Length: 390
Image (tube, rainbow, N blue to C red):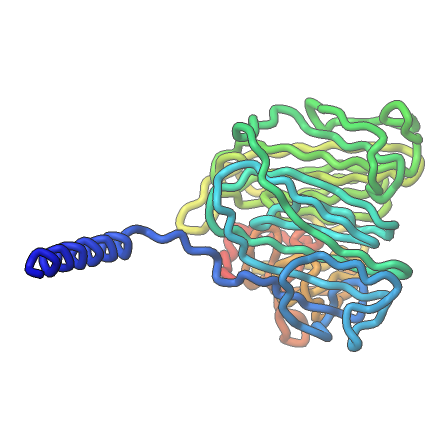
């Protein structure tokens, strides 16, 4: 009996020690929001306040000719899903989006999949390297009419980390709106093309085509000036931020914008389309100054931007003039977010602050919002504006 009590005592002590050790070990904790936050709009542009907000376990929908909810129309609706996802291992992940009609997918602010066009059901995949831990994933979708399908998933892939891309990956589409699949994919040393009246390659038309170039570029931390020369339309993302958005017909015009980058390997995406006539696509960039305490310290004099014909020069100080026909003013510095209003060409705005390629402005009526910096002409150094946290 005494021996049994001794054995029981020893076992109890061992169990207590094991429990204490287990409690002291670091625990692998998954992201708090294990479900998707889903916001639904009764429009195709995710504009205004959402009609419906709910949680979803997965993005795996085939609504057919029906509606996602009695409060949502069966056609001309849009959805935004957001979630912080825990990825258990470091490695390469393949993301796949299946849609009818359009869908975009971001991971940590980097645009991985962009098929924002009317279409029949199709799938697009993209790979990205992720460190183990939490990552922000955002999916946007719109339905134009007919069948409605929205699915997005990912799977881990084996293999070593991706080799830094020394050239541009060029996806060439025989349509004007980057409609998949591409006619061909090739590596381009530079984005420096003047095709004139010719096609960019085999199985491509001379007019009504589009191209998407992607690349990781090693940059020093600080301020980098990007210049895109195009005929016709261009969009440029730097580190997941839309820096230049001029998706309309042009005649050999150069757009310039400045991005503040953290340094290291920075993802850059340039999209281009040719309508008809001459076809030109060029991209140049240069590092122009370090960052000191959140403010950019230029090492060369900043350029003086003169207003286009028909626009009065802005007064001295933090003021800018709108150069777009109608410039959307948004509640946050994010493309696709809530549009507060639109201001016409030539409107004078007060510049309050900046965040990436966005400017916070004060409108003539005193209201405030965010606009893309590439649509504002000013002689005021944007580096003098405070960087605003969200």
